[in-house]
Amino acid sequence: MSTGTESGGLSREEQNKLQNVEIEDRLHHIDNKILILSGKGGVGKSSVATYLSVALARRGKKIGLMDVDLHGPSIPRMLGMKGNLQPSSVPGKAIPVEVLPNLHVISIEVLMGENKDTATIWRGPLKIGVIRQFISDIEWSDLDYLIIDSPPGTGDEPLTVAQTIPDASAVIVTTPQEVSLADVRKSINFCREVKMRILGIVENMSGLKCPYCGKIIDLFRSDGGQLMAKKEGLRLLASLPIEPEVVKKGDMGDLSCLDKEDLPFTEEFQKLVDQIEELAVKRDSTSIQQQDKDEEKGEATTNDKVVIAVPAEEGKLCEHFGHCKQFVLIETENGTIKSKSSHTPPAHQPGVLPRWLHEQGADIIIAGGMGESARHLFEQNGIKVIIGAPMESPESLVSQYLSNTLESGDNLCDH
Image (cartoon, one colour):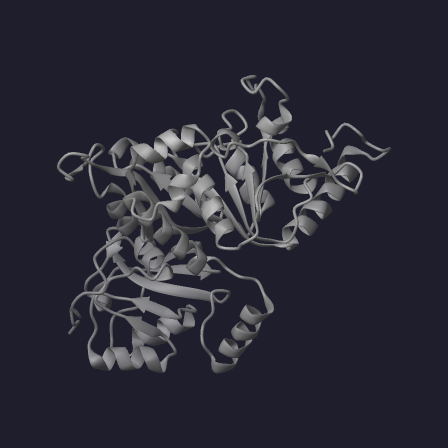
């Protein structure tokens, strides 16, 4: 693996351009890139990344696992990794460590030699360079998934991944207690700032089953992840219970716990894997052909730009859309929010608002309620109507709509 010091007569700018080309070429052969994030340390993020990679590999998927937690790499020990990077036939490149059939791994610990406890004392630019090398200088084969384990927080490492792999999606890991959830909100906002699609939230350590009475003990509160997911308009992918056997095996680099289907942890984790496979974007010819068919039918796809209008008052949905002081227009693309703007509507008269919103480029309106005649006028102007939405912020409602978690209630008909 190149250290980045061999210039070969090229300037630093020329080296960066060459590396960008290599990165783009590598990423072109990877269907799905998933960044495992957490706002706080100690929530089991690396465990989720490790077990997800192993479970997908056992299902026959070709997996790359990239550990970019440069200061506290734990994945090699959890996997019981042995072996080193192998030189590639291409000068300056290396082949990642094969841990299981279909699973190859790269971690900074592999490069540390015999002393695995050496402290990694690096500043931002060096860390950024190493992460980029993990992509450009590692000869990843064609992969179904590249799972990326990031350190906690929203610093250099996840930002570098977001900038280097613009089509990466995120899975955010938390525990149920408020101190963890507060940091998770930062991770959610980070993803939205960098336009990264969030697949969902994993609540880890959700409860401990008493070995004597079988009762679930909520050590860190309960349902925190579920409430957070609902509030932010995200999907709760799994609530993973504390399982002492999983903890013990993980410390030993033993993955056999995933074979025990009777363990509550294993059962719930397999549901997580099912959802990841369901949500992942497969960039193959079949999906492209299907997208073409959808466009011929006039159906929206996840690649469409969609403008969603929400009548708002004091930062929340206004129950009576015809009397609201502001309409918030939120532009979305590829299933993510791109921009938001507020607009003062004209005076409410029959037929005025549908025409005005059509002129503003609105495709959808999310409302609390609407009469049949008003609904018909919106549809005549090419605007899809969603009614019965809860009185939450426009951003939350749109996020819920994009993730298919928007729960509509009664049609609070506006007269």
